[in-house]
Image (cartoon, rainbow over the protein chains, first blue to last red):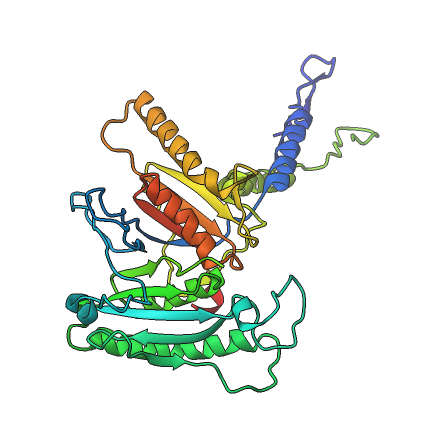
Length: 232
Length: 154
């Protein structure tokens, strides 16, 4: 890169490449990139399709919409979901097809209804569960009557609990849940089973995603999630 | 920089290795630099982790509309907070703008626009649901729920 002094005619002509500006620019570029450098997060996503509401010609009241991940082709007609809420009205039972093919996972969460104070940021609470943490997971299995729920995790007997116990117990309950889901998936008619996740409105999103994760791990093709029952 | 003395003794610092290293560093940063809008990478949003998803982000759709839900359930779009009742109008406007832009650059046929929801792990389910429902009402068909890869457990 650098030239040398060369003596051509006795007057000593200096032919050297001046690299100082080049170095300056190179360092400026480097400083710029060091400042804006931001390592890409290991972000990924669940994807799915939004199912539209029932068309206007359907009788009121509008059905509870649900949002699912079913991979549908674009030329498929839009799916209209008229599935009842989990607390089905007494005069309306879920239809037979739904009972046979739909597995519903209900997640209840601790909230103000339980008489607990709302947990604030960095606030230690002397009870095991915090607002929005799950407290109960039950399944309504395909082919079983709507009211017959299989408990995967039920509230423990009253005992002194430490902060964080709710999360720990939730994590522990995921293993038996996954085993059960795989049993259903690999059992007779398992390929046709759809899963509906029905979380409590105040459930923290983190737990919802963990539940979705478990359903994905169990290799269910269609996983839907329901409208919240009521917003607190 | 040049030494004195008799004869042709040139005492110069050899800058070639320094330049090599600097250029390599520049190349590294150029390759790994990630220019994203704040709405696509809002550090205030702590995404939940997923153990089952390993695939990279699908860049197939024509365009994305980003929605961030922070831990208090507030909607963050373009560095500002959006009232929940304004969301549907916002996503409708975004869709029309993106469709017009696509037409201007000569794209024909339906434009595939996907809602990207980046919700904090402490946001509540009904807040996430409300955001998706507003998008559903605005005519969007596909969504992506962004999560972090739980590399430690995979």
